[in-house]
Length: 256
Ligand SMILES: NC(=O)c1ccc[n+]([C@@H]2O[C@H](COP(=O)([O-])OP(=O)(O)OC[C@H]3O[C@@H](n4cnc5c(N)ncnc54)[C@H](OP(=O)(O)O)[C@@H]3O)[C@@H](O)[C@H]2O)c1
Image (cartoon, rainbow, N blue to C red; front, side):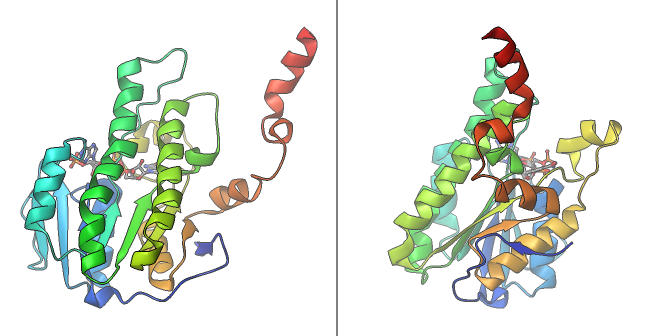
């Protein structure tokens, strides 16, 4: 799958071999692929966090417990990992809730993990990245950040908030020299999308998505689309709402 640098613009290249990375949710799903791809690329050290950490085989991996919704725990982690230069906000939750029909607790949990969790880690680690020379943040987003489906959109709202977080923090950290990159993609073959696999939807290989994210990061890209469908939708954002969501128009016209 080709790497897509959305902006067509990149800042300075990053050398992974000199990085100490922190991957939230690094024990399973896409996070596990980030960890293994970082190791393939010669990363110096990786903190891989999970709510249920497991010992790692590679001596460069430090497995640590973390629930990203627990702000105090995130701040405590920052104290035990002051050498981090690359923060990968990968932890995420999707509950398939809809705005009107879903359980509000699910919608809140999506915001807690996808948005607040990333904000917690960014606030805790931004000063560390700055002190360590700038470093980088990779936020794992989703095409749902800029696309509504009519179902599962409470997840999209949380990812849209995380997208805005990504763009805003990039500006706030520009003077520190911190590269802030967003990685968006459609369905990926992990536990999160097991429902889609059952329904026969096309799923991206998580190894390829992790590679695309790290390729973009290394190349200094500020936003990366991991697959073609996300790239296409991202490119359409200048279109009118009627063009983007034509399915809503006939019913509204009939009502008029
Ligand atoms: N799979 C897809 O189709 C897809 C598509 C677009 C974007 N994404 C995004 O890709 C990222 C990885 O998702 P995935 O596909 O690997 O999903 P997954 O298989 O369901 O794994 C979810 C990951 O998030 C972590 N996590 C969940 N709640 C957490 C919490 N409260 N605190 C800390 N970690 C937490 C889990 O860690 P533990 O359970 O080990 O603590 C696990 O590593 C997410 O940000 C997701 O939104 C996924």
